[in-house]
Image (cartoon, rainbow, N blue to C red):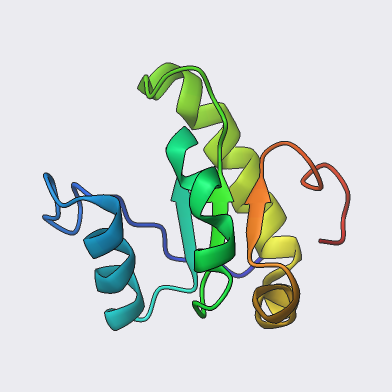
Length: 107
């Protein structure tokens, strides 16, 4: 199965950078998916719709590694299955909240 590249804020040395700038940096560096657990980002959903990137909000109660890892693995599998559809998804609905829509094979 083909792989996808996953990178964290720490991996990119972007620690301390706030969401607005993080999004701009992700776009500049060619990211196609932006996964976050920022519950406040939902309020900016309409503004995010114009950006050419897929936002996935984990919607988890904490950022603890032990809680994030199982969800990240599910999302990785979902992204691999739907890799060819990501561009279409970005152009139609670029903001998704986990777990809605992630347990099926199609976005």
